[in-house]
Image (cartoon, rainbow, N blue to C red; front, top):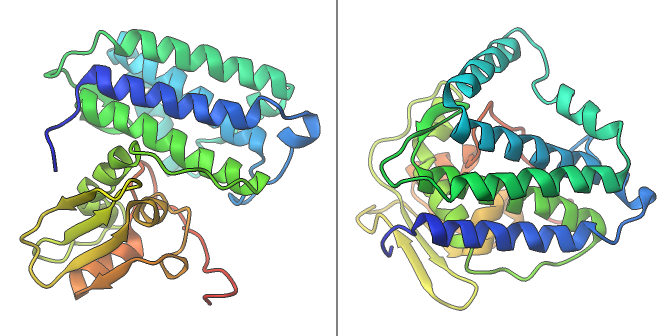
Length: 270
């Protein structure tokens, strides 16, 4: 892959990703905000309030790292005891009109973009788990925006045009391979896995070319849908070869937090 993007490049891509999702939800009436999404129990309102809350949290992690770290520790401790870490901010969003939720997200993301512009390459930003480099931190916010945007698009029956911004999602997905096993208490299989993807404009994106007999090949869109758990592997055109690659794709998770249930295969592929 090419050299890592700069903070300014990532901020521009994050802003574009947010704008694209905003254009999907801006025309919605109250009924539209209440439409169910593929995430069980989540309406479109919940998808956007989730982004608003975590964009606020991301800005706090930059401006008040100690305060954020304390709050994140308490949240993770509560999750261990069985408390739903999503409940509070989802309830906050459910008490608002759709227009109010959208205004909340617009404020939160504007603040995040503003404070993130001051990040320096060597800085570490605390998060729910290990601290992250600015590039990984901003890529994670873009990944979350894209993934929750996919839920919204699926709810509305909209097919989104893939963009080159998928490279950030794919990069996170590749680098999160060890985490995908660790979060489940599993040891990753030894060796590397080559990931060979075709980007939206026909460009080739390759990671770990020395993966030997283990590899994942296909479209960048399909890979991103799998690692964000928005599609079951069997509903994509990805070709997976080798035990290490197959075991990874069964648990792949680009996002932080506890293991997600993933998506069941569609009836046509089951």
